[in-house]
Image (cartoon, rainbow, N blue to C red; front, side, top):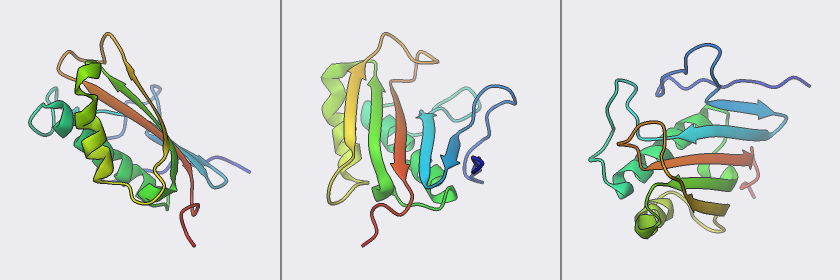
Length: 133
């Protein structure tokens, strides 16, 4: 079995030779760390922790759908924030996109992300079709 690399028309593709936004092997998918970066040096949303988390989840949703799944197919989230005191803002955004049994999750504070204005990065892993039935 060969892995696949879904592409979403809603997201910019990374530069060649850097990473893939998403990979699928069998029915398992892996979504790379998504941030609120707009691809032009700025941010999507208003820059708050909550807004950045919303933008991360929107990008993850685009990639999961490009892979043929839905958000509730996500089994695990890894969430990186630059200020753990604002974690409730991330959880608020997470509650807007998941229903039923939420994914397993790790949330940790890091010193910095790729650019100083980024405060949230989220990766997702799951199994296509796992939320059906």
